[in-house]
Length: 484
Image 1 (cartoon, one colour):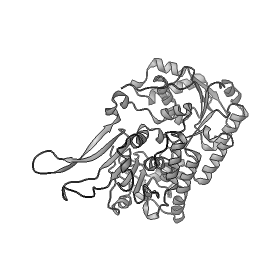
Image 2: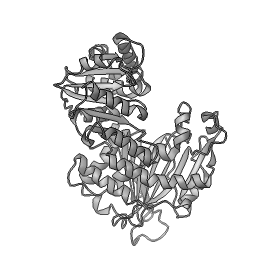
Image 3: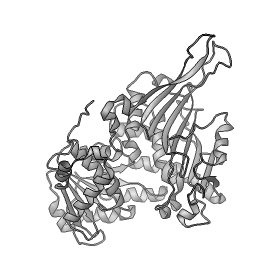
Image 4: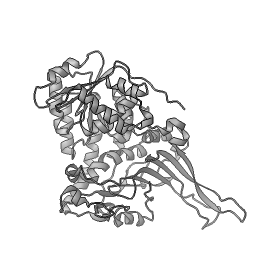
């Protein structure tokens, strides 16, 4: 199957922090893949702006090495790399001063799409915005891309939004949550709203519960200073898991367009009940299996920050009243896996009697690895000897169902950056959405901080703290096993 590639308009994309880790791992390799697939027009240019003392040639070497490291060998070739590098520019810029800004202004073309990627700390957003306007580089038609964290509580999120609003309209600001760029996440909306099969069952009458899991095998080494201030709740639940919850629980928007989709997600966040302390389990990994402990990774033996969290959440609206949503995420767990599992209720009456091996129907949306969807249904086990039931999967992996193209799923950043150039904000977070998520998160964090709760230790390579299992067991349910 050949993917339909729709070229975008000519553009100038300026990447502030263009020599940083995010640019090396995600932005530059993603842009190369879009170029190689024919989505980037010949007139497109990518301009890196950073404080590094390098020239254009050195940045191109940086970009070439990034492509070689992060793009599979069968998805790159010397000719396309050379042509891609010809579109790269570099300017040394002082965000706090005047150096480099006239040179950057001279490179920007007024007759193409102009986008500015703020791949820098949020504390620099204000200075960047002011200098872009002071040097007449930015105007009401440009676009600005900002990365998380969007603040670390409601007050800082409001301040950050206010800073951006001083210089840009809401329609110009693209807040990236890369989870929304994942193909499987977008397919979740397609499965829900492009098929009649599930929507009549997508409510508390038929859904027993929903599990959302984002498990990682890595620790926090290298991000210790940031992570020890944030923790799993702020780093993962407030944004990534919240977005997944919204896509599962939202009402059908009237049209697949930015504000229609984001209006429905906002309604879900505002409908979330406060979380009771008994419905929260926090954990912190300890040393084991050749891994350092969390305290060793962050250099703080007295840290009360969680590297794991599990919550039971309720959406207080007509559709979901009474159906629990179980969220969990953590570091140093048994396997790397991100999935959503929608478990349906038992049939109201079994014609086959009790003890016939009945299991719930479960729709599993696998985000990573091995992206795909699986629906577990009951069938008769083959053979004589009566009616024996067996649950089997109706399995659709992208790699198998979509052939060669399915095995080459674009990285989330590829899709999202091209959406910025197109001017499509559907998969980006709106300012009021960010603030509503923090308004729900802040009281949860404040309560355990006031009690000075210490996270429960758990072994590296396990499924997390024992109390997380009890969170489900007391409801007569159990977590799905974390597996690669």
